[in-house]
Image (cartoon, rainbow, N blue to C red; front, side):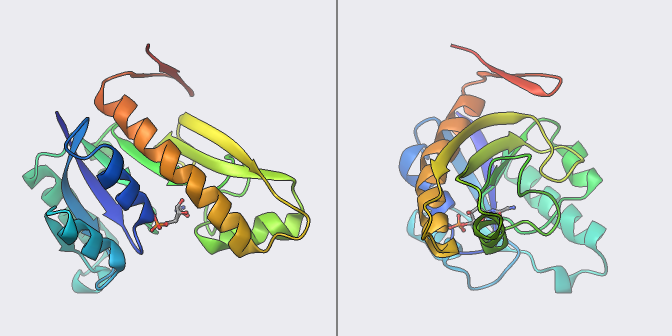
Length: 204
Ligand code: GAR
């Protein structure tokens, strides 16, 4: 069974979806790392008996050292892959190079729309409502050096209704995320994802 590390920054509902749907089955969540102390995602890890750590950027001289510490922890726990489940930081090149094609991110929109620097969490759903698009969705993708620019593994859409608030959109997208992320991580852990350039082939 592959070991994965999950990086979070907040409530961790996507982490919970991974705990409920794949932990101990297709994957072992070996470690949860948060860059914020006292977030509910850490409680979720504890309740599931999964080791966790808080790594705060303030404790390090610079961003490189902060990310190097997270890499060290993930390697200590022998993680084969890393899942960004609501992790609100852009990874350094060194981090990405430590896990080539083995880092997966979930983004709460249809990449390449509403993505890139500054588009995270509620900012995304506000931008979606402001723009007036009729559909949005969720995207699970491999992480490369371009922010939100790596090869797409799974992507599905939901409709945006005329009277939706950003919070309404968030709830609809989150329900989709909770289905897509465990599915993508299971495919990764079963070695069923083949990356060919920008395209990801899913093996039967
Ligand atoms: C999720 O909607 C996730 O897609 C988003 O943050 C939320 C975390 O929720 N991630 C990003 O915006 C990354 N760019 P959660 O903590 O309840 O899983």
